[in-house]
Amino acid sequence: MTRNLPTALLVCEAKEHGRILFVNKAMLDLFECTNTGDFMAYTQEKAENIIWECERERMSRLIWQQAAEDALSRLQDPYT
Image 1 (cartoon, rainbow, N blue to C red):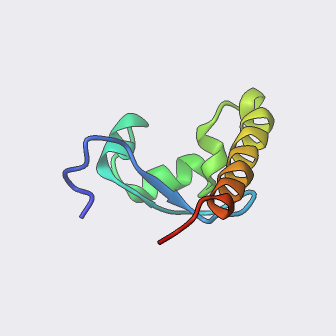
Image 2 (image 1 turned 120 degrees about the vertical axis):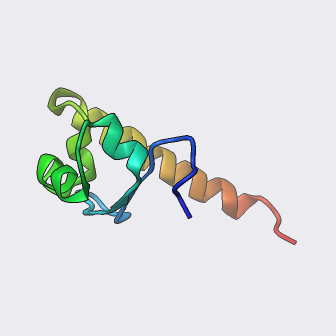
Image 3 (image 1 turned 30 degrees about the vertical axis):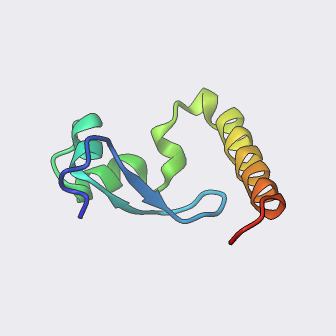
């Protein structure tokens, strides 16, 4: 299903320090990993480890802030 996507894709648990569940070949190529096992070892199976250590706290804050804002906007928009 993801083979022909023109972008790198990473799926992880939707929680702080979420474990990586899936990466596509474009993500492996981006990080110069030969296979999923190599990528998981490189990242220690945590999505936050693809971000420079000095930026992790700031990026985590921004991601959770954006998720909260998106959730609030969905509650305000009518659904039909």
